[in-house]
Image 1 (tube, rainbow, N blue to C red):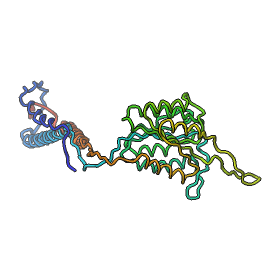
Image 2 (image 1 turned 135 degrees about the vertical axis):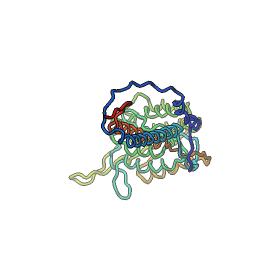
Image 3 (image 1 turned 60 degrees about the horizontal axis):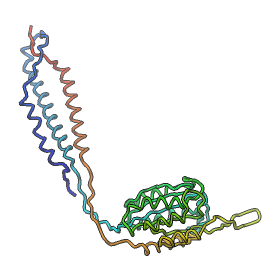
Image 4 (image 1 turned 90 degrees about the horizontal axis):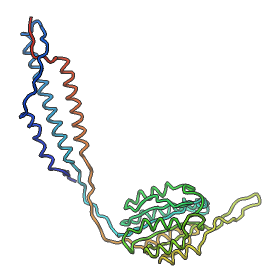
Length: 337
């Protein structure tokens, strides 16, 4: 690590205060005289104290000016070089958070979990592995919302996914709107690297865009869609008459398969968490991470330290002037008795 200055040319401003010596002194009015007994005996002591205060204020003023110029030059702490793998791939995750995603028909380590909780756990691991990819997150229910734009910051995308709540976007499922929003966000990205992973447990029941028409548009824009249908389709419920299996969703597998086929992607079915893990592992192999690298050096700004010190010195100068004036009132003529 080393310290550098973003604007070193500002150090040329250091001698500017010397210009004040070339300016004519301002004329001051003579205040009323004050008679003071024993003035001759006190005069050396008064001059000594006044001179000391004047020198102290001058030293503080010089230090404050040096610190201000130092802050203006923007000192920066330059970190060690960081190597980042880059694939150039732009990958958008669209996650269903409709009401049916709260059904607890998924298991991890023998524990029953809701579908959304399982997705958070498994998809979170997938996100962490996507080094070098730009990731984005769309949440959809009645409508589709962009939760995270495309970014290299995987931790933020994972955090936003973990904060998603059932019903936040409504109880129904707008698959077509989610695809349309993803196309809009991926359209400006490099061709052949636009990928959408769409995860849902239901059929399209809301929104303004038909999913198949959205898939046709995605194919024209070069967006490849991988669709994942999640949920067992039924779950056991304890009743007074014993355990009973009930349906837990209306997954439209035909539409999800058609969406994937139209765009050159694939459809996957995840009945449980283990299958969901395998699907994401397969996606890693289908969409491998490039080994190309980019380098960058982290930069931390340090200007606020000298700026804060200059402000503190300015306060000390003002206090010295105020209290100094009380101890020795300004006067140009003092007559002794």
